[in-house]
Structure formats: C-alpha cells, structure tokens
Image 1 (cartoon, rainbow, N blue to C red):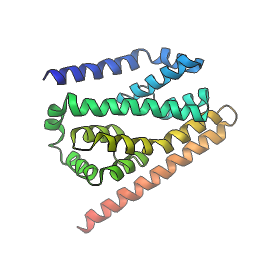
Image 2: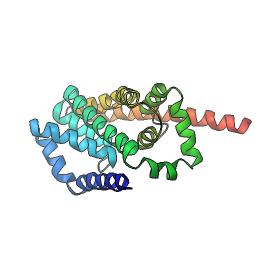
Image 3: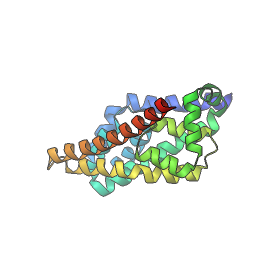
Image 4: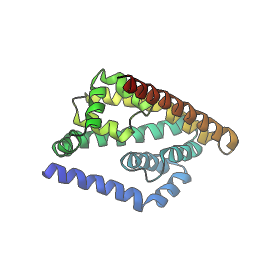
Length: 209
C-alpha cells in the first residue's frame, strides 16, 4: 500500500513539474548550452509520463537547437530515462494494484500475451510501429515477467528511427521548412499504412473465424 501511494505521488509530482514549468523548461532548452543539454533530457523524460508537449514537437525543437547527432543523444537518453523510470514504477511501485485493475481486461491480457511471446521482437516491433500505445507497452512490461534488460535493449533500438527522423527534421527546419514537414509527414504516412494493414488483416481473420 505504501509503495503504491509513494509511486502515485512521484508520478503526480513529475506530471505537475511538466505542466507548471513547461514554458520555463522550453525557454531554457532554446537557449542552448550545457544547462540546456540536461534540461532537455529532463523534459523529454517528463513527457514520457505525460505528454505536456507532443514528443514530435519537443524532439524537433531539440534537434533544431543541438543539431541531428546531439539531438538524437539528448532525446534518446531522456526518453529512455523516463521509460525505465515508468517501467520500474510499474514493476515495483503499484504492481499489485495495477495488476488487479488492468489484468482483468481482455485487451490488456491479449497485449500481455503478445509481449511475453518472444519479448525482444514483440517490444521492438511495438516501438518501431506503435501498434500498442507506448505507455501501455511500458506498463504491461513492468507488470509482466519481461526481463528489464530485454525491455531496455528492445525499447532503445526501437526508438532510434523515430528520434533520428525527428531530430534531423528539426535540425533542417530553419533552412528548409518544406523538407522538414515532408520528411516527418512521409514517415507518419508509412507508419499509418503499416498500422492500417495490420488492423485490416486482423479484422479479416476475425470475420473468417
């Protein structure tokens, strides 16, 4: 019980910082410099818990401030710090409470079954192609028996393409806005089409059954 209260309190504090200090944190990020570097990582980590700013916008801003290479490092480090904190809170903080609430839902049980089968490839697929919302993947993996190192490795590799494209688009924005929008728009279109095909095939199988 105490673990659950502590974990929920930590979650609320993190979200509150993001909501109340959003403008100040963004201003610090845009200033550049070493302080901005670490503030950017912190803000990305906060946005894993609650997207006070849409991640594509934040990663694009970071790419615009630091350039592609450093932007990838900052966004990936922050994203994985937040993701692992969320994973550990799910596993050790409010595990029993969340299991009672979530694991009775058929859809969640279906997700858990999918993520437990060949965990690395399942998590990697979900990170590359967001078939399941990212926070749901993190929570279910935290509640399940997925090894933390498998979760960390698959999540890190799976996040790289998205962050790389966002950082590059952000770094190119000032010189070629049309290219930046086109690059990210094309990427999102590909993701949408892949998701559409997966959902369509799943519905087709159900109609046959």
